[in-house]
Amino acid sequence: MEATVVRTGTEGKTWGGGNEPLKSSYGKMMMWFFIVSDALTFSGFLAAYGFSRFKFLDSWPIADEVFNHFPFLHGVDAPMYYVALMTFILIFSSVTMVLAVDAGHQLKKGKVTFYMFLTIIGGVIFLGSQAWEWKNFINGTYGAVYTNGGNVLQFIDGEGHRVALADIAVPEASVRVEHEARSGVWFESERSLPSYSIEEVKAGFAANPDLLIRTQIMTEEGEKTILSREESLAKLDSEAVGVVEGANLTRNEYGPPLFGDFFFFITGFHGFHVFSGVLINIIIFFNVILGTYERRKNYEMVEKVGLYWHFVDLVWVFVFTFFYLV
Image: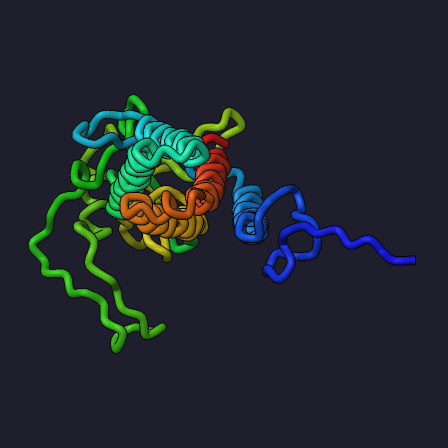
């Protein structure tokens, strides 16, 4: 008895075998495999962040106090406003990518070009915004002092408002020398001298009776612990050993060093993904202009890069939730 052979039209091609899983092409399936593996990577990073935050739950920085800057509004307390704007821009770029993919299905080259251009602009604005946010995070706003145990002490006035080191420190005439590796016990050198020495800060604090110290430890009400004037003077004199301004990978003025480490690593890793997506979008954009996909009668490449872009946007929603909202 002779067997019946069904012809599928895929014989001899890479994606052969008689069917297409989930009705997807080989290229789209490979993009999905990459997205799943990358999602597991981000999940591991965010899980590590969650465990670390749980460990330092009583001393973790308050996001509204850390991310409260807005461009051209220096000194204005705008908690989370700019981060929310960044998130809106990235999500809106995902909408324009959907419109570009839909226009590609209809073989409308002009609309694909227009919506791809808007998507690229959205990605570039997001990257610029993230760089601006990093600058403010690194430079800091108020400054603080750290203790011999690695804890951070911040300064507030009688009404509970943060006070910057510049408003406290009393400049001294002595010349400060930057610590070098050859003269250190642990053979480490300072990156740069802080604006003020710990002696200048102590002198300024002692001369201003309205100032108090706020520790990084949370109260049961979810607020930082504020010491009395006597406790503040005692703690500053006995435990404060250095000045910290902004954040780096060693310490930061906001709280536990792990907060800065995770912030730089996870937001930087996501920013690299956005940067890669923008570059790929630019390549696809020029291919659209040159008519490459018009001649193929197929805009599947736009759809594949669209999958990656939607994934990047979705990951940011989780990063935004973990770092800024929870």
